[in-house]
Image (tube, helix red, strand yellow):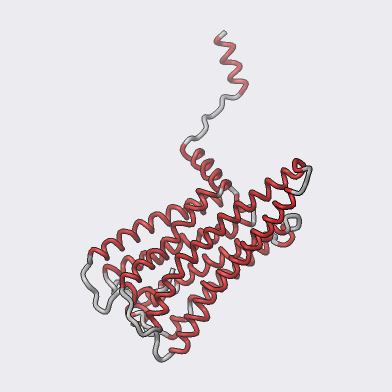
Length: 335
């Protein structure tokens, strides 16, 4: 996830060269990444919807995360692949202006969804008795609408002041609007895509850990531990889910942070950065879209079971049972 103004200068040197070994490797890797991300996230979305996991508010936010990763692989990563073949591949500037904000849009929606997941898990563990009152379904839907609207507002500004050539080809910042560029890059992208989500997720999962630790100490001090078995089991299940989601959130930051650092130095620093670093960190950043569904299928028991049931029903359809009356007649004839 990143817009053309973030990646074009990294991917496309001043003159469009012939494909090199590194370019072929990059195209191959990104192509495999697209297939993996589309397949994994598409399957995850299908499982959540068809197996009625959306009855739980928690999966509203997981669905938003999977949708943003799916759209990123469908609409944004292919533009990077096409750009490696020909930096002027756009048939018109209209398409260029459409694809430019997509990276920031889907990336911001992903990280905001992860932040919402972290807050939701904290509410589940900290106040399980009145959780349904604090996070009802209609409130979760409103939060998702706000997340996508704010992500769109975060992605659009650069196309409002940058020239067509800067957006579709060079990727350079606008010298005439340098102040706007600095404010957008640092106060918008860094603040809302990296800093604030990192703080929200870190604080949420640290509090979850402290609550789980306190709960464990409290149980150890009880003589009648058997009476708390069900409660303990549920708490451990919630904690395990929080750990998995915390890992996913941490991976997102680790995948995105290096590329943001390189882009910051490249755009506003005086030193030159080798294109190989751009390509490596770009691949790492895009890889995040394919990792999320894999981690959820591996470590989320509920999603994994729903997937197995869906696949079993799809490939191993149960045989039609003979009605009891027909079965009785058949047996009597045999006798």
